[in-house]
Image (cartoon, rainbow, N blue to C red; front, side, top):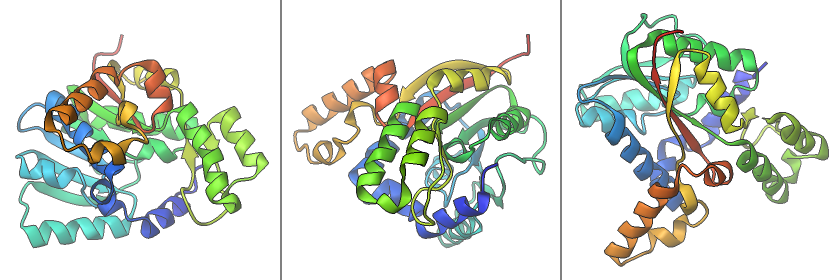
Length: 275
């Protein structure tokens, strides 16, 4: 079972509030994710941002006119979100709730036009937990509504654990390195650093959502071939070249090889009828 206390402790120490602003990798991820949301979200949607941390997406989407419900496991991040909502007088944030993604009982059936699931699937290590999460997402989502779910693909995530060993050997030993390659689960050996990780294949993600009424519209790499080139891309001064690079990143983002090897990925699906 996932140790949710470890996950909460990780986000107490990690600067999730500024992750998408303070470095080039976060800024590229934010820009390309917002492009997908702009393309797929209907106007005036009511959206559940599940695992939305301190509101990195909820707050700008609320300012754009979307009705947002922000939910996260971390009391600290929800506190930060509430402070921002109050200080900026943001009216379209309907609530900021401390919620575990496997238990959405406080939300009614078919309440939302869309659900953003940007985080929980990074950490839910057990299949039953992932099934419960997506079952709940399906329940609160209106018929025809969309889910946007980020995940860390198996190869990209597993290989990154070897890189973690080079940087933080106290977090990785041969046992948990072998475990992540055999099962997709990462159990950190230390109290510091990323905790309770799960890295699925794209087939696993498709099967998980299909089990709960979802029809896949797209699976893409969030940063595409810009992954680990973010600093260089961020420094491109020629605006036409920059736009060409961003266009090519988006154009190739659904290639399976890029999804598998280029960091965070996203599943976009529509809730359909059970067959």
